[in-house]
Length: 212
Image (cartoon, rainbow, N blue to C red; front, top):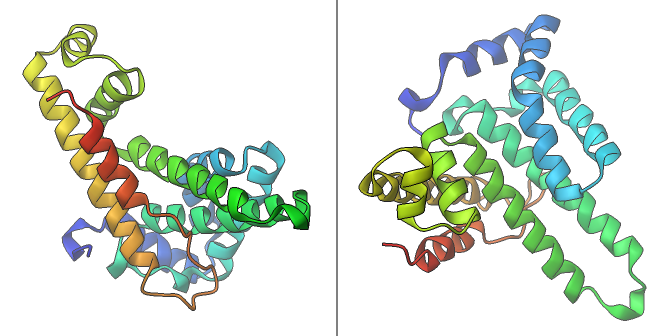
């Protein structure tokens, strides 16, 4: 559960400005967070036009219903990320369902959707990490390099590479678990649940690293 001291004043101030109908607040929000929203939507939907449309819809909802964001539950960035994730997964599920013939069933489709959604959420959280942790995860985990190779490429000690990787994975697991907890207690919410077990996926990443 997020604590008040973790909430940037910017979030609350921007929400109040949106509630007053300040168009400049919407512009500021769009400039700061639309790359994240569009990137997450694009990774899930794999369709530029669909990502563009969903991005417009997300910011239209924030403009029309700024009260939907509760600063006590987390940052505006996290809230928009969770909202985008749910909407994109719903859209992908509907699209895949329409593309497949009824006689083929939905099992494979659902597995594919879960895999895409989980990968997109993990990447979204990795992108939000501090730059030193983000680049260490990218080089060590995604590029499949050893800690010694990572240290040499980044110009740091091997121990520092290990510490960065461990901290990055811990923050990744915590953020994914927080997002899951924010979604699961609201089964009746209009946006629905993503249906993917992202925390388990992250734990698997940490266990299989095998570089300690």
